[in-house]
View 1: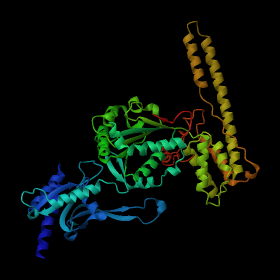
View 2: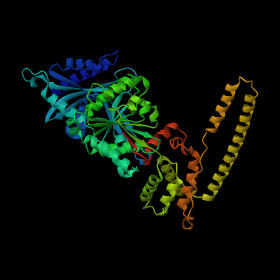
View 3: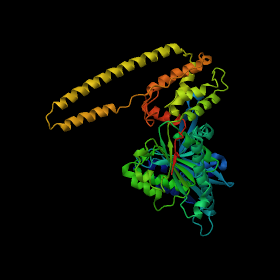
View 4: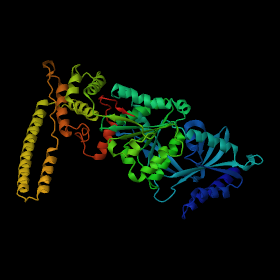
Length: 555
């Protein structure tokens, strides 16, 4: 009993030292805690380790050791927390958790009991995340002659460090200047499969071979003295499959023990150059890995472009790193990124889907709904949908199927009423366009008259008038929606009727100019929250590429 009281008194003194450190301005907190422990535990050797490099408590919680928090005497500080269900749809009561800010753990490793203190704090005012340190106490008497480090503490740090460096059903995500491990993104990726990706078969096969072949070819690169690194750019129309292709790659590479590192932003209080440096440092540690830069054109701005390129192909070794960059606007990328060999030297163009890809996607939905006896998805319908949806991205096609199913499920399949509304709106739009055209022509005639009435030196003014008229004529008219001829035996098919109605509504939301690169940029029917639309366009994007003349894979 006396031994316990003595230990408790000593532990209490350490706790008071921790409190006093936060009662005054502090600069070097890990040193202050270390010094407090050294004063109260003079007969112990103290090994300090940052949890970010070796998470001793997490290592124990994973079942590789045992860590029991000493609660007697109330000489600890912990915070209770509530974690709601991952989504409201899942229901449930959520979970109650505890985060220990300061405490002593009785820790068993290799059948040896150790005392380990854990403490965390904010490194500076306004910091977004706390830093955590562990202090491993071993009796000085256990050290051999000449030993300055505790062997058992070092073995524990080595084991926990190795465990901490490996992803455990997680994906590394970089945001706000630091890397975090995301189980949420890992879970989202698990549902992504190449079987669900509708791409032109040749493009799909080439992309998979490019990525998987890179990670299988280390010896070949070394044999020819070539740096084992690659860069791929996915570019093209929004909603045509770039994001879902990346997710399928992330999922398929897990079985090859290839880590995926996802970069959200370069923004950080330490500056964007710090972020770029930190990103590539981690990628070199995790190699072989796939380093993902989504929306590359918005990440690599002019002021950091040179620094970024130096990290990509500078003096440091980037062996084993495959970079994937995606962009909706290839023309916005600097030529040093998009055209320079040895950086991003492989490009895949994601165009609007051709009819055969739209047919494949419609057949994919037919298969998904095969067990639903409420939907009469006739065998002829996929081909009809592929013709009806000319100009649709796969994000729009997914929205078409979702809205059709929601309309049927909610009992709002009153086709005649909504078709009447659509026709009325379409007629009003035609009248409005005719009125605008009449106004434009009168305005153009008035400007032409003014130009002609100018003196002989007014040629420039007349030319300006012509240029303005050309600019107005350059505005491309909306092309008409494809007409769908419904066979007599399908005229009463509710699914087809509702789908045709929803296609008309979505068509009105699109920019149906002749330029296929414009399609999919306007919002489909739904919430007008830009952030929501951006997230949904990434998560729900379909995945198709048009098989045009030449290869969509640009080398």
